[in-house]
Length: 477
Image (spheres, rainbow, N blue to C red):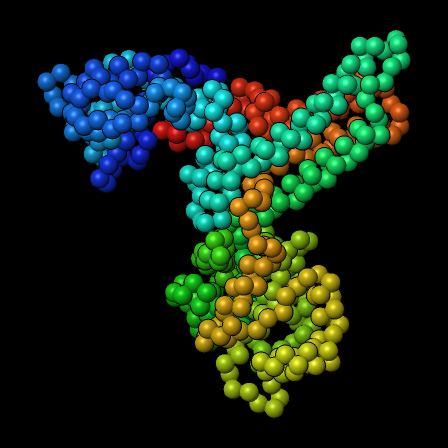
């Protein structure tokens, strides 16, 4: 690493610009006496704010409050100082220049958190959670990051890893007594332990799809035939006129996006061009983009007009877009149009009538949709009827149970890869155990698994890994 860990580091902890307060922070042995060189007050007790002025010789830079955090009771476990000044870019820059002139240096991205990790205050997964908290943009991603900062995944990994270490130590001991042909590790117990740990790892791995979606937002495409009401639906969900609504078919020729937060999760709704045989080159490009966007999405909302239902057309359109693992809502729209005797009975809000109609007319398609876990729903986008039910259905497609603060959910792609590596290595160890392969090969597979798990918490790390993680942090963190 290029960091000099015995330096006094200096950085802005807030973004300079328009605002009342800006904070400049320092960390490292000697940072308190360094600040005192230009401070008219006197830093004394830890965690106590002191009023005064910061001066460069006779020039007053700013009126400030200075708080010291004496080791080890600080973010980095080193001596730290935070200077609260006015949030002027000029003032903050002058402060940093003065502090560097007195012996500090500008911090690298993530260097404060790196020191917290290297000094043992947090592990690597908790350090990554700090960045996730800063980047969180919705309630659920904040909760997940906060849970990880409190040691959510770390606690799980530490327990699993320790059980493996205990057995690995016995196998390693056997290798030292190879000539005596002794066996310290009970093979059956080790197999059961590996199966148990693989099951726990599989559970963690399975949460990544949800965790990643919560962290980044969930792409939700609105597709369907022209004039089905896709743009009206987008506007109704977002409660703003984001898309142009017209009775002229083919009005939407490019994708239009908007974000809606449902129960703490961001859904990125994407309105697309209507699916049909294009009448010109531009519309053709729009329809191609529709198919591309839809196939890249987590959720597909296929909108059809309940006044002109073509079951085969709907099935053909949906199956041309559907990708394995995609969540699908088949949504009948225009429930506000006055009913006639020949209207689609699905427009009756009577459950018995809907069931009878589906049994007679939708059975072949509906059975296939049930098998694929598709959701059938109806709304009036124009009148806003049943939109709350639609939003609840959208949420349930992603989160099928109530998220709890105690639940460990994997949100980090690096952790996901390491969990997979640990799971696969344990699988090889299990195969070798069942085949009565030499203990040194079993020990090697277990060591590989331990290394993968250790990478998550930082017990096993490399300079390149740390550089990659902490370089993505902001300067003052």
